[in-house]
Length: 169
Picture 1 (cartoon, helix red, strand yellow):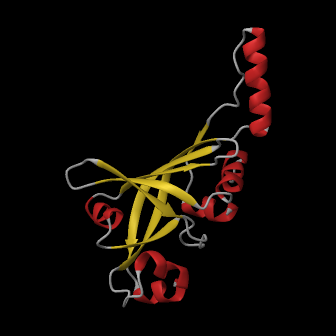
Picture 2 (cartoon, one colour):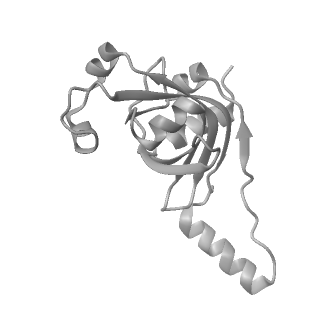
C-alpha cells in the first residue's frame, strides 16, 4: 500500500534531476560525485549511467552501499536516500536506453565500459517546506521580531521499495 509520505516523496523526487552520490572506496573512505538521475524505469526507478572506470563505478563494484543527496535551491527542500547499488552491464539494455547526450560525459566510445547503476533504496529522509521560500522568510522574520523560534515542517523518514517508488514516479 502506497502511503501519503511515499506519494509526497514521488512528487518531490520528480522535481530533481541531479544529486550527489556518496559511495565508499576500497579503503572505506567516502567519496562524492554529482550524478544525473535518469528517467525512471518500471524495473529501476532510480538509476544512473557511469563507467566501470569512474569513481562511482569502481567504488560500487567493491561496496554497493550508496547515499543519494538531492537539494532544491528555490526553497531548500531536500531528499536523502540510502540504499544499495546494483551494477547492470547488459549491453542490450544499455543500447536500448542510450541517449546521445550521454556522449558529453561518457564519450563516443564502443560502450564496453558503460554500466547502469540501479539503486535499491532502503531508507529515505526528506523535507519540503509547506510555504515555499517566501513563507520561510516570513516565518524567520516573525520569529526574529517576536523572540520566538521558527515552526518547521517535520522531516519525514520512510522505507520504500523499488516497486513502490516506480508506482509514484
